[in-house]
Each structure stands twice: as structure tokens, then as C-alpha cells.
Image: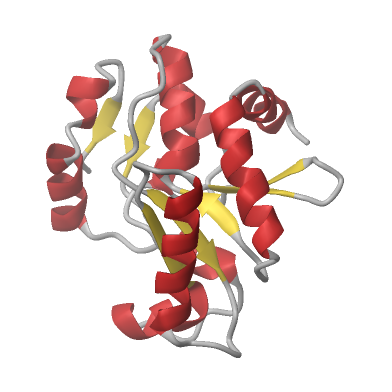
Length: 183
């Protein structure tokens, strides 16, 4: 692990709620899964801003299973997790089918979907391994999240969507030290 992964792992391991979420998803035994986006990004931004945990509008669980592209499984997993964590909204998506929604070539693994998300600091995921260690996926690195830089994904730029998301999610109001780079 690099220093940013070590720092992020310590942050998550000190957060009983996030660790409980990771343990619950590990128990589902999904193939190639991550709790992603705001689950990890927001925890880092809260820590840098020295804020209590900001509520998540949803918890993104992504996995990769090309053998079962049915959305019924996603709905069942969402209901199961929401029963375990009342008041939380889980959004579960099989990345093996998400290329169809976005008009991309088929994804080869879960990270193929994550690395296409709109903002660089959102392109992150974490999973708990059987030995209780954490594994991260962060194609732009976790240092970016700790630096509070919010850049558009240069590999798949969608400027209008980027600007709309930053405004709609009220990130600057929640985390005033963020540096939003609209170019």
C-alpha cells in the first residue's frame, strides 16, 4: 500500500459504520465488488474538513458478473442491504451490463465501469478482503481525494454533466475547501 492507501485504510478502519457496510457486502460473496464513489470520497473529504460524517444520499455498490445481467438481482441486493441498514439507500449495479447504458464497449471488470465516472475523485472504490484487509481501486490515485481537487475525468470528459453534478450535489457548500476545476 502507498501512503495514501494506508491513510485511507486507517480512516475507514476507525469508522465502525463503514466497516459494517464493508463486512455486510463481503458476506454477500459477490464477484469483483467495491463500495464506491461517495462511500469513500466523502469519508476523505469529511476527514480533511474535520467534519462529522456527512449523510450519503446513496451507497454505491458495484460488482461484475457477466453471467447474470438481470436487474432483479440488483433490486434484491438493494432490499437486503437496506433491511440491514435501515434509513440507508443502496444503489447496486452490475458493471457487466452498464456499458450498454453508456454506449461503451463491454467492460472487462468492475474497475472498467468505475474509471469512466464523471469526476476523478468519484472514480474510487474499496472492498474488504477475507483477511480483513482493504483493497482500493483508484485509477487517478487517492492522493487526489486528499488534496480536495475535483477534476473532470479526462479519459471520458462530460463537461455539462460534471458542472451539473457539482452544483446539484452542493459539494462546495458541504466541503468549502474543495477546488473545483471546470476545465
